[in-house]
Amino acid sequence: MLVLAMLAATIEVRRDGPPLTPEQARAMTPAALGDALLASPHPPIVEAVVGPEGVLPPPPPDMPETTEIKLFAAVVPASQPGFCEKTRMVVALAPVMRRDGNLPPARAQTVSSTKLYRLAERNADGIECEAERHAFFAVDPKLGDRTFSVIRLLDTLKIAYNSKVQITIDDRGARELRDLARRHPDEMRNVPEEAITPIVSGGSAMAKFPISSINMIGPYAAAWHGDLLTKTDLKAVKDHGWEAYQIFAGGEWDTGVIVDGDRIVTVRFVRAIPPPF
Image 1 (cartoon, rainbow, N blue to C red):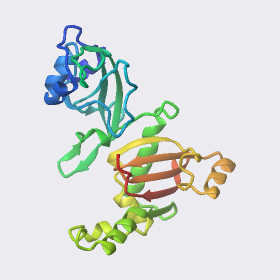
Image 2: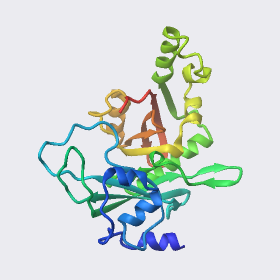
Image 3: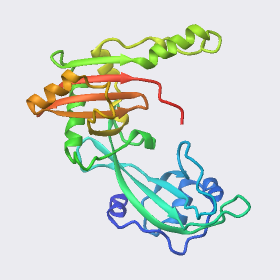
């Protein structure tokens, strides 16, 4: 209850906190970094990311630079039944100019927060909520609570496979790994057989779909995902007034889903090796 109360309170930066360089921030534990950047009381911090993730172009020369630090709170049960909730806080340090190629210390200047969610995992001991940050998704404002109902429909289909639902899988990732194993047998000899064996049936794909690791769900955009749902799929969506969604999960599962009210019509999986970042 204490954690929930702190999450309900406004999260603010600590105005008298110590100035930090990115290197100093990276050397701190997530909990200590949260205490240095956020005013009390604040939710317990269990994970932190200092600076950008992935490869970005260098900042313009002779311009002040702002370091962003992402802080992730401990997970709590969400108000949506069956879901878990984690708060992501993005703290911006005050802009500073580089000195001798390095960023000098700067204090926290602003903070924004976003609620992230995941479907709780079920196991023999009950449900499991905590997971790394990549297993959580933010709610698309266009979908709102419909987000959770669509995931529940997928979860029901995962638990009780329905042969009337059209489910397909294009397992590009396994085929690419299999080709690599054939070309480089020595380097790939420790790759498990399952990883290079393509999933071919919709039922098997649905069973293996990492539904508790969804990190993006939103309205389907053909311009972005032209090869996920087919032209026939999209025509049916338009003709029948159905809904189409795109979901990404587990780092490699891209999914197109067509829904008619409270039933799923079509699920199309594309499983691929993610590009390097």
